[in-house]
Length: 136
Image (cartoon, rainbow, N blue to C red; front, side, top):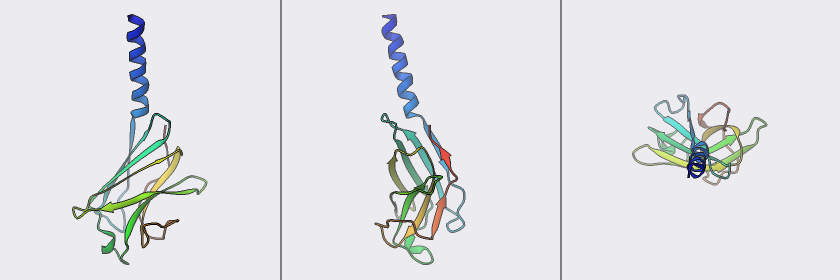
C-alpha cells in the first residue's frame, strides 16, 4: 500500500510539472498604450509549448492609422525563424484571445496589425512585443 501511495504522489508531481505555467507580460505599446497583454506559457504532456495570449483594452485594428483588418500573433526564435500562431480577434469589449502550440522552447512573441488574416509573414506594424524567453 505504501508503494502505491508513493507512486501516486510521484505521478501527481510529474503531472504538476508539465502543467506549470509561466506568465509573460508584454510591455506598454507605443501604438496602443492602453493595451494590456499577458501570455500563459506551459508545456503539454507531449512536451509541446502551449501559448494562451489574452489582451485587454486593445483598439480594434480598423481604428489604427492606417486601418488594418486583423491582428496576428507571431513568434520569433533567436535565429530569426518566424512562425504565425493565429489571429487575435478583438471584441467590442476590446478584449481578445488567441491560443497556439509550438515545439519551440526559446522565442519572443509579437503581435502585428495586418491587412490579410492569412498573412504568411509579419508586416511592419508591430503592436505588442516581448523579449526573448525560454520555456521549461
